[in-house]
Each structure stands twice: as C-alpha cells, then as structure tokens.
Image (cartoon, rainbow, N blue to C red; front, top):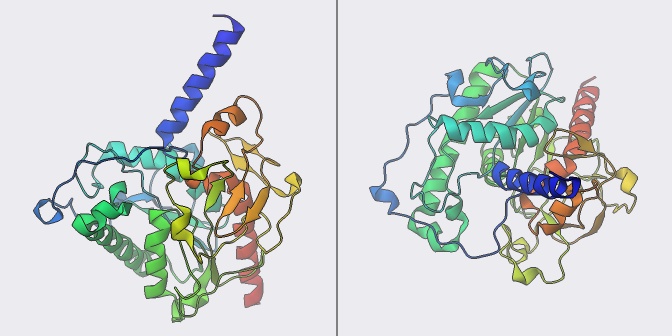
Length: 355
C-alpha cells in the first residue's frame, strides 16, 4: 500500500469512526422513522437505582476496564451528576425508549458520551451517571411529539428524577453538586433543576449546572440565573454550537435556529460576554484518540448560538471536520478542556466562599 493510498484509507476509517461514535454524526435529509402507538407499546423495565448495575458510572462501581474512569475514586469533595444525550436514533427501531438491560447500547454510551463528554467534569467531582430509558431521537420531530414522543420523553425523565432521588438519599452525603448533561440529557436536567434546586434549599449546594445542547430562556427559572463570570457559582451555563455555513438552510441541523429565538448563551471559552479572537484562549478540543488540541477554535460571533469555523487540529482531522455541517454533538468535546478547567475553578470558588 503506497503512502498516498494509506492516507486516503486512514481518512475513510476515521470518518467512519466519527459517524459511529455518535458525537459528530449528522443528517442532511429529512428522516422518516418506523413508529407505533405509544399506548400499545411495551415500556422497558424500570431501573432500580439502588443497584449499581443500573448506573453507567458510579464511584463505587468496578469499572477498571475503562481507563478514562480511573480517577473516579470517590475521593473528591464534590459530586457530578451527568446525564447522557440521545444516541438512540435507529430509524428502523420502532421502540420509544431504550432498555437499561441492553448491554450493547450501554457500551455505546460508555464509549461515546461518557468517554468524550462526561470526563470533562471528572477532575471537579465524583462522577455519577444514571443509565436511563432515554427517548428515541424521533421524539424531537414535531411529527412524532404528540403521537407518543411526549410520553416517551416523560418516561425518560421519570428515570432521571428517580436516580437523582436515590443519589441524594444514599450517595451524596451532603456534598456540593455539579449538574451536567447534553441535549436530551440537558433537557431533563432543566426540569430536575426546577423541581429540586430552583429557589429551594438544595440550590445552596449547587456549584454549577452545565446545560449545553438545550434551549433555555430567561424566564425558564424562577431563581436560578445564567452565570456570567468564570468563578461564579450557584447558577447555570448553556450553549449550542454552530458551524458557520454559506447556506445553512440547505442542511437539516439537529437544532434549527428557528427554535433558538431568545435562547440564552454562555461562552465556553471566556465564560463571560467577551468574544476573544485569540486562538490561544481556547484550552482544548478532545479528539477521538483522547488527545487534547489547544488553540483550535475561536468563537466568531454569538447570537442565540455560538458560531465557529472548522477547528484547526491538523491534517487529516480538520479536513474531516470540514465536511461536517452540524456541530451540535460536539458541544462538549470541542470545548472539553475549557470545561474541565472551568469546572475545577468553580468548585474551588465554591469552597472558598464557605470559609
């Protein structure tokens, strides 16, 4: 195999891996899904969160085979409660919710969302991530929302709520908490924050809520506020990442601008209202080989989303990214190191305020 062909073959393999990992997958066409009436479908078994087997990640669970979880030793003074996004999107699968007993799907969640997203918070707190009956991707399509989608979404939230209640009762032991998720995960966490934190006693224990991939407007919370400095605590952060395109309307993006009217936005590089055009301010993009590429991104502008150009992480990686039009599923790993450092900084700030 000559060098030129080897390079091309390598690009094909990496592109296939990206599309398989569920983090940067996109579709430019309207997708029609197989479906059935929710009332006539059988819901998967309800998880029991007192059992460690129903957690994707838990500090007391033996997960030695995952080297990226080696630091999750339950020795930190804060906790992280992380909820994975939607990776259940098979258009031929008519089920509304996943089963926590599906080991193959659980492994996909571990090797994608946990590995490339949840680990961003692991230096700030002990990581907990419940396995839950997540709703199929089609629930976010208006064609399916009133025909079972809302029921499936509510079923998924029931699991998140129950897992958090068990976490508070059995595992938290009074520690402050970081709430984090992405996309469907962030959506469920918005509701969780309203029920457990917003204007309630538990808000005093909230270090920060990181809610990328959700649409949050100024009146969505009663007491919780969008944080506007890098050491602020007790509030939330949210953003949606867009690639700058010549004709965005040509593409079927995961989150369309139409739905972002009046959406709040945090800057995951500066964590304030300043838009820096210095690549050196970007702390790091987590790539598929677990390598962090710093200085890869600048935020060109912020409207109701974050607008960036193709990240600069060298050949052939940047070439591959140039073909991707939808950066929604890169909301976290594009800013992975920025989030990691910021989560540690906010946690330190929280404990300083206690003294």
